[in-house]
Image 1 (tube, one colour):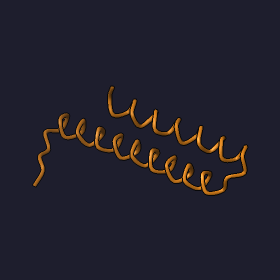
Image 2: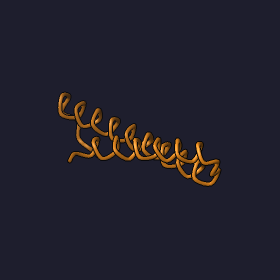
Image 3: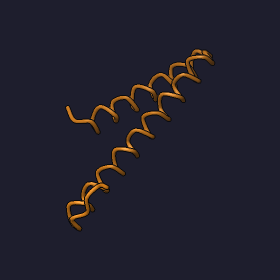
Length: 65
């Protein structure tokens, strides 16, 4: 399982937690789910940025200093 699949799974888990918390009225569970969902989105964005940077370095031959 790749990193993006794990992050998508993590985001889906957070959404399920959010629904469960909303249905049961558990505000703590809802807050936890929102945090987990936000973390998953940030990690996905970070991974996409790093992939783009790697592609650009490869294409233009740039190296780290």
